[in-house]
Length: 246
Image (cartoon, rainbow, N blue to C red; front, side):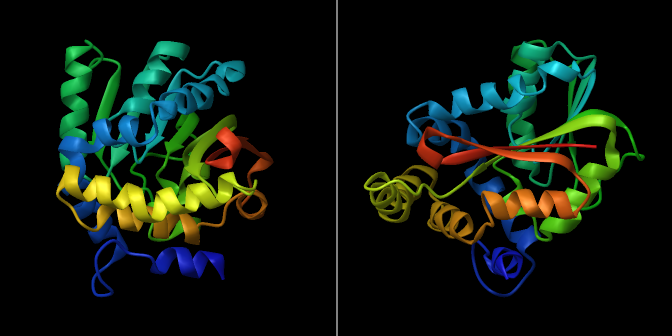
């Protein structure tokens, strides 16, 4: 049931595919995306990404696929911490990728990190291609969650790890109530004024509400074939890091 709900949440309207609408939404907010991420989270999102990449240090990955890479923040962090041979980022929003390529160029990382237009549900790489696969705040946007997770497992090498960072729902009183109010009423107003897209940050709240977080997502990973799946909440449960192995 949770998967059905998640798939039905769209940024704009009922007509048209979720994938097309998500792509349009991120194209619209791309110029402000990085600023809003850091501003609205008070910069905590940076530490979340650092912890996500740190969780891969034990396998020393040399080839990494960053799914729904956006502007490439997680890919850049992977290079900083892990010094891999190659990081490939894929995303369906070309505007986000363009912003990311500028960031890579400024950091002289273009030879190591390649950002490509790509669909999480049809990853254009052979089986067993990558030592690690990462996603930050992207899986809840998949049109077909199970299809995307299966593709990520397919391209992961045996013994490799997937690290998925995603928003989740806090449970601790009164933080839970404050979080709901901020996410539902304050954040969309700030996002609407700043990014000029009246729907994007309302969709953020709705998509997080519908996402099967915590134990439900761990069960989903396990059922799809991921081994030793775990969930580690960050910052009182605002987001959760999911780890799975192949």
